[in-house]
Each structure stands twice: as C-alpha cells, then as structure tokens.
Image 1 (cartoon, helix red, strand yellow):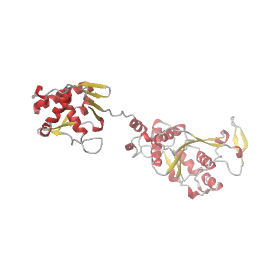
Image 2: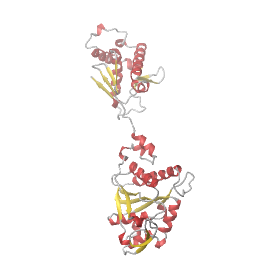
Image 3: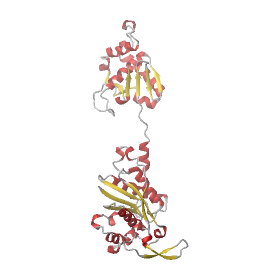
Image 4: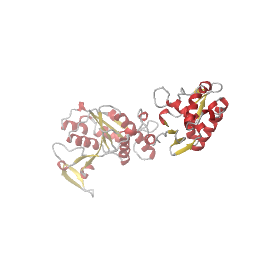
Length: 374
C-alpha cells in the first residue's frame, strides 16, 4: 500500500521535516508528499526545504539514509491557495480566504482518498489554526479507515526556533530563546518530537455514492446525510385502511376495492427493480381496465365479508363504466389528499397520464414501498 503525506504549512516549513522524522522514527514510510500552503508559505518551502542539495528536506533524507527517489516531492506537490481569479493568496486573513482554503483542502483530500491501495497521513501541525481546522473537516468527510490524522508535538523551545528542522543524527548545540526572549545554548539531543494520532469520525460511508464522483463543499455533503427515509403505504384490507407514516384513512368497500386493484397491478409489475422512476408500464387505459371488472368485484365481495353479488348494485363498483370510474376515482383522491396532504397525495392517489382518449391510470409510488395486508 502506498503512503501519502498531506500537510498544511504556513511560515514554518519545519513541520514537514518534523513530521517526516516522527514517521520515520515510527518506521512508517512515505511515498509521496503534498503540502497545502499560501504564497508566502510556498516561498519558505522552496527556499528552506527544496532549495537545492542544501535544502533541509534533502539534508534530512541524506542524513537518515532515505533515497530521495522513493518519495515524490517537488515544487508541483506544493499546492497554493488561490482566489477566484487564480491569484495566489499571501495569507489567510479573511472569511473569503478561508473559503478558498477549505475548497483546496476538500479537493485535495477527495483526490488523494479516491486513489485505491493508498493510505493518507494528514498532518495538521502547521499553518494557522484555521488551516488545521479546514483539513480536519475534510478528513472527517472523506477519510477512510486506513487514513490517519496526525499532529506533531515538538519541545517548545525548539518548536519556535527557525533553525531547527529535525533532530540531527549527530547532536549539535544551537542558540534558543527563553520565555523572556533571552538567548541560551542547548544541545539538539534534548529535542523531543512526538507523533500524536488524532482519532476522527468519518462519514464517508454514509455519503451517497453520487456525491463521491467529484469533490463537494461540506454543506452539500452534510445535507446529503439528512434524508428522511421514504415512507411506505400500507393497504390493510381487513380494516379497510390506508396507512401512511402515522396517519390512517378509512375507505368504504367500493373505494378500497378500486384502490386495492391498482395497488395490486403495481405490485405485480414484472419489470425489474424496486423503484419506478418515470416508468408508467403498469398504468392502464380505460378499455383494458374495464376488462378487469371480475377482479375488482372479487376484491369488493371480500371486503363486504361474503355479501352476495345479487344484493349489490350493478351501477357502481360491480358495473364499472368510464363515468362512474371517474366519479369513484375523484372521491378516492379527494379523501387521500385530505388525509395525507397534497404533497403525499401526488404519489399515493390514482394518477393519470396522457390525454383522452389515451389516458392511462395507476399509482406513482414505487412498488417496493407498497404493502398489501390481506
């Protein structure tokens, strides 16, 4: 597995070599390095880390016997925050600058965590606090189980020293300053660098797959998690009730018989898949619908608990025609809208598509969300 280091850095590029040192001490290799910084931070990295063979990055690799060819890190791996005009931002000083910084963190984190067979080590030790916060947020949104979020703790007196980049193999004395700004000399063998693994809660697996095709802003990703579970509709033929969410609607036998017929047609649709989308294959034109009179009559008789068909009027549900069908449908739909609201009614009611004489009728709700209790 390839290990990638992504760090934020400001005017102290030492955090990069300090992080590399800490990882090296923990026997963790790094194959690729990326840094998010500002224009001023970039100039510091170029001058103090990547500045030829004497750059502190190169001296660190040489001193600890690491082949520079094994780590991909050059000027192209330094990612500078830019404004909307493509101009490099010198420092993070405003809310607008912070928005651009967050976008850079989100984009780069998305790209690196999208690679297969990799683990990303995120270092939040450098730069302004807002840089650490933005990268941490990106990790919480896109981080995977194999990724790690790190902070590097350096002995305070060495942390503030511009000449200290990592503990050299051969200790040497350097000039430091105390809390009062007074200089003093101390040996680098006393420098302590600790790698702190920061636990994070990732929501990546809860993000819908269509939001993982390209980088998104945090607001969009968070809203994708706030999804109401789509409610189903239960037809209880025993109690002659329609049940939607916590609401119930009592239907008279003729209305329930007609509605149950269309629900059964929807459930019996042989088309694969549980969602219907724009499909209307189960919708029936008037003439084919009327040929199902016997099926509707049987449902009605069951609802009437065995009442003889001879006792029933043949001008209503037992003797359907275009006129009384439209009347029954209208009454059913009005009752549904009154009970469940107009928004829910759009997918629950007996809908129509097309214009006369080619109008077709059916229920829009996905068949997987319909349940018929006999």
